[in-house]
Image (cartoon, helix red, strand yellow):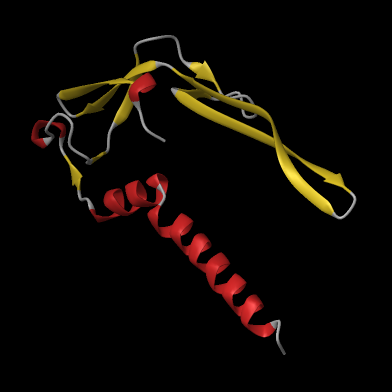
Length: 122
């Protein structure tokens, strides 16, 4: 019974860390911001603002080929991990982490947005 407060404390700390990572990571915050945004036309978009833009892609650089599907794309991200076990412990080691991007335009009617994918946040 003496170990109960320790396990309760450990559980609360672990749950707090998981909740913090889930709700307050940069990616989670960005997803929440984009979810709230209404899609805008390019003519209404202000430089540096967070917004959803819907349109068609036109390539400035030659299009990339996705590594698995071999479809034309403007950006892809590959993250391959391997589970390494040693006795009772195991962890994940990154084998490949690659992000390849090209420059492209998003066309919305008569307006274009130039996207340099090197500056994009993920």
